[in-house]
Image (tube, rainbow, N blue to C red):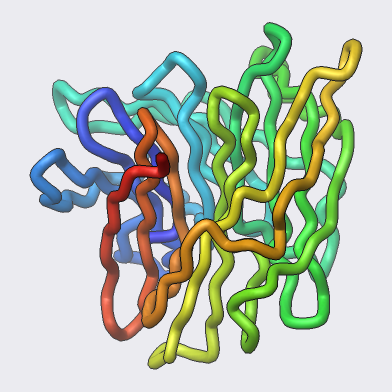
Length: 249
């Protein structure tokens, strides 16, 4: 699992699969049963790495490829189908950027979107943000912040996913990825806080050196926070996938 979001019932997940015949999206029910869903178009996405739910619209979400190509989707729980509403591109993406996280949030009555380039080893990750206009599928960049994490130490992706809670707190996961057989390690951080600043927003970094929690033996590639609970989803390659649900207070 490479992206995850909380639906009205259960959770929706995406997968970073690249071959025909492999699942791109699925549902995890409240009893932790997984069911793959059909992608809504004949052309399949390539390397879906992130997903987030629209604030106040629990069955509508955006899934994003590592290239920054975004799919605005709606899930219908009555027939377990997904509908594609729009496609759009995150601006300013150039090699060797590799996006791993996306978050949609509201501050000051405006809709904002944040996305993260994962970084690697000595190269820091970068968090970007901008205003999101869903009617014309336009993203207006407004700022960025680069950072490196203190854990994991080796083969590190400084950002493997992200989420932003209602109070503006930005959470990120980081992960080590030495290959399909691991060994993997991960950590989750409270990276900082988004606040309104006039007609725009500002990001205030906080405590990046102090992990909220360290997870040994797993590669966390997806996180979501809802109702005081942190859900982590892993892509442990040849070892499969797992979910971890825990309170954050």
